[in-house]
Length: 289
Image (spheres, rainbow, N blue to C red):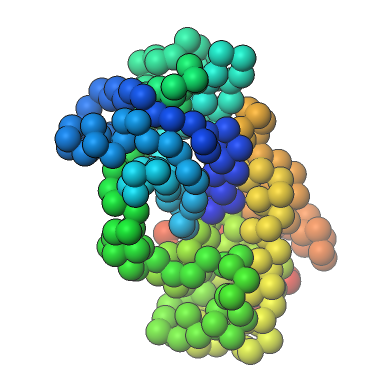
C-alpha cells in the first residue's frame, strides 16, 4: 500500500497537468473500478473542468467545476497515466503503461479531454476505484471522519501529536503510528525511519514514551515525510513520479530494508523483527527496550 509521500508525489504531478482541462468522454471496464450512476456521469462529469487535485491521507480528490469530485484510491497497483498529443506522463505504480498504447488490458477508466489529452486509470489487480460524489459530501465520508490529522499540516503541533496517542496507551508505539485514525498517511517504511531517528524501540507501549521522546518522534515523522516527498517517495513501492522516475527516498533510509548493514549512527548491525504484524527494522543498540 502506498504511503503519504508516494500519493503526494502523484498529486503534485497530476495537478501540473490536468487542472483546467475539460472532460468530454468517459469509458470504464467494470462497475467495481468506477461505481457511478450513468446519470451522475452525464450531469456532473462530462463537460466538467478539473479545478483542483487534492489529497487526504492516501486518497486523491480530483475536483470538478460541477461541484462534484472524483475520489481516487490507487490501492496496491493503481496508476494514473496522462497522455496528450505531445506529452506522456505516468504517476503511480509503473508498468508497461508508460510505453504501451493506451488503453491496454490493465486500463480500468479512461477520461478524455477536449484538447485531445486523456487520463488513464490503470490497475492490474483491480483493487483501486474512482468514485464520483458531491464535493461538499467528502468531509462526511466514513473514511474522512475516521482518519487522523495530516502529519505535515502547519496546524498539527507536537502537543496535538502526543495527545493523539493517549487512547492507545497499551498499544505498541509502532502499531499506534500505523493506525490511520491516530495520524494519517504513516506506513511501515516511514514508521521504522521515524522510530530509528527518535531512538525509540517499536515494541514499547505508548504509555512508556516520555515527553522528550514524543517531541523527538514528532520531529522525526515530519522530517522523514518531508524528505520522502522531496525525493519523490520510495522506490520500495515501485512508485514513479509524473516524469516516470522512481522515488529515491530509499537511498536515504537509515533503518528500513537495511538489515545486516551497520547502523549509520553507531555501527551496530541493523536487525529485522516483527512488530504489529509488519517486518520492522531496528538498531538494537540505539533503540533499546
